[in-house]
Length: 148
Picture 1: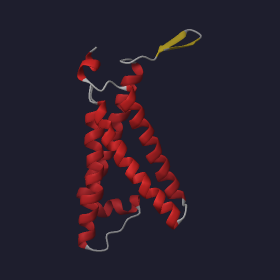
Picture 2 (picture 1 turned 30 degrees about the vertical axis):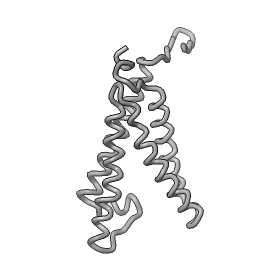
Picture 3 (picture 1 turned 45 degrees about the vertical axis):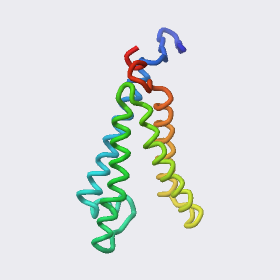
């Protein structure tokens, strides 16, 4: 498929600029998730304000480190791995993970009401899901396809 505009011609085919841009976006998403994981695991108290959570006891810090840190680490690993040539099928893991988070966010909105932070978080999750699923479908899923 080619898009032409005056003197500029952009070709949108597999293995082109769009694929490279997608890989860069995925890498950035993976790094952000990895930083979130490191933050929750090493400084959960420092992450409390950004994520509107409070650990009221020591075991609550363990929950932040394990549950939230682990979730972000899982997302980071599979986003970064799935961004590699021929590995896009692995992007289904963070996509499903974010759908589960989005489901929980929907329950929160229904039971607790719609707030500005809930809207922001929901939009971030939806945009992330769209990017991950588009990349999963667009990028080659097999090594031989990636090298073709």
